[in-house]
Image (cartoon, rainbow, N blue to C red; front, side):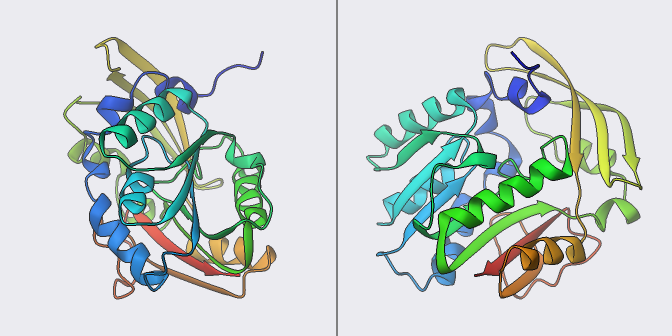
Length: 255
């Protein structure tokens, strides 16, 4: 059996604390934006990649959309199914690897928010595999909306200071930060507590992307139009030009 990666270890028992993290609190506003992007068309089938505890999937299902949520972590999916039952939302949650999705030309929209696995993979090839796999799952003419870590941010700011300032109630500690200018990867030691209060220590490794990279990757996969904006928590907007102040970028690609 292959060694578990840091993101797999993190999400083994972290679902409830994940739902209380500051960066998970903008669901309603983010879904408002998604609805506007698809003109409120309830007939469309939506794929939520790296759905986690299902916050976007459930909210969109409650609004009347047909949603399939996939995630690598069965623990996160268990929490997602529990929340869906509580909120009487019908979502098809499936345990799957985003690099090898079992779909072909099935969906009208794919979303992959709060990284959704993208940027977390240990190699650029694996991240690209996610983009390829999602693209394969989409019908011609479909949209792909996702967020990615903004590579312009660490050129002007300290990632460590940003994360320390915006950490959640579990008081995760970030240490040993090293940003590699040759690979645009941020390496750090992450210390936090799981849902049972047990300490977890992880060697995190995340990939930041600059806009031109994302555009080139998506154009190489056949997307006709790629637009990139700043990603403001709970308030995605086409009015927000991407700047060095944005920790994440919002990508809207049209096949």
